[in-house]
Length: 346
Image (cartoon, rainbow, N blue to C red; front, side, top):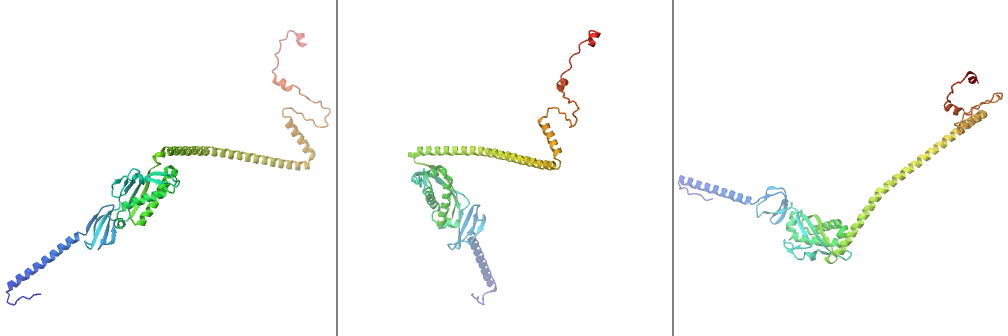
């Protein structure tokens, strides 16, 4: 700190003090403005579906994914890179063309779509992969071109899965299984490469045999569909007939069980009745025998009028009302008028 000479006038010393104060205030204000301007470069805006990868002195620090106005230490202390993690991207692997990874279509798509099946046939497969970014840092800094890596991995996964299935399965029977297995293998490959991408779905768009044999394969597919339709019709008929037959069988079993139970109950009742009758017969054989005889006659001759004569009444003339019922049921003959006294008496 410099010292002022003692012979400097007081007003000069005041002016110098004011100048120093103004200079200090100006320096502080300028510093504040510079620091504010520097701190302003640390603000950034995140929209929904975006994430910011924060780098501190060039090294990964953290990932921010909450939307809104955010701040980090201004450059060069910290820097950020915004990555879109909310949108679902789509890669088309149709049989007509292929993407070279930079958005341009190449003519190698048709050759790339030709794949070999497990039964040594060639099939043209077209499919679509839907994916999104699940890790912003890996997707931005781990691989140079995540999209090109995805395309190569998807073709490799599809070829591996198609090579494990027959051509009939790829064309018709196991299309869903092929898509599911391809999705699983593709996700494993992407995770192994640390691409930071998540596979949403793999959809088979087309699977056709080569043009030279396509008609024959169409006939095979049509025959397979006819077979499946016949099998479904047979199963439907079986599902209709079998329950009906089972119901009838159950009904007959129930009827037989009922008939058996009725016969058993009747036989047991007859046996109990016979035992009771035997007990009464042993007590009074003559009376029981006569009662049985009379009941038997009632059963044998239900429509015949019967007259019971006790023994010892031989002097009684038997009464046989022959033709009584016919006389009672027939109307009486008309009565003739009387012609004279003697003839009427006669």
